[in-house]
Length: 219
Ligand code: SAH
Ligand code: MG
Image 1: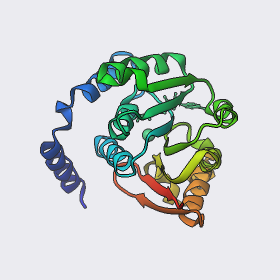
Image 2: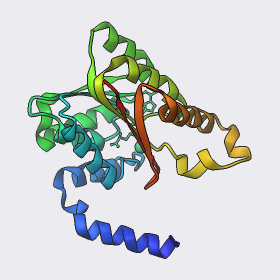
Image 3: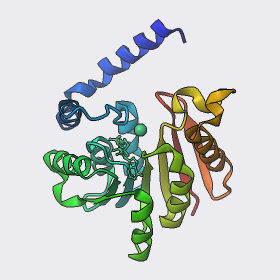
Image 4: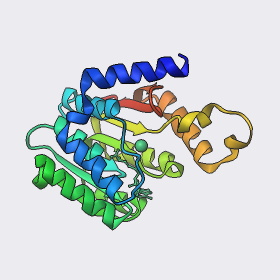
């Protein structure tokens, strides 16, 4: 598609779905902007897809790696069973605090738990506690995606959904030359190759926005 056709299609879809009328998610985006935080919440179509996947799979225990302002957290919680819970791992205390507030304002206050620090330090704790999950969303530092996949496979219940955002790295995963040497690019290539080929998974890499890879851990 040409750039103008792309813009037309985006406007068309925005008008169909009226994402900006979603008060809880609009509040998240506004709070991120006010604080000068990075404006990298999952795009609205993928937020909706995450809700849909969590709901379609009947998930009740979700794990998120990378909370930011709580946008994807709200999308996940909307899809979980009524008693479903989210554990979200976030490096920065002030981001986790904002996400907690936004998730509470969206009506999910009692059902989300934020754990602060390096996700790779928190993940072994979840395993020690015997926690398992039926929906896992990976959306933190890109260099660690292969390690996050190892943990996702360890913590996944049979039939779990694993979804990961930004798996195209704005096209850099497909470029030759310098970009290929960047640690995030080689890590993402490894992650994508494993998601595609692991015999325990059925997966697809969706090329819209910045790429979302979705997999089911086959029971
Ligand atoms: N999932 C969010 C967006 C996450 S942006 C949404 O769509 O709403 C990526 C987040 O990962 C940032 O909040 C960043 O602070 C966090 N992050 C980066 N490195 C991390 C690490 N090593 N451990 C845990 N969180 C990390
Ligand atoms: Mg992302």
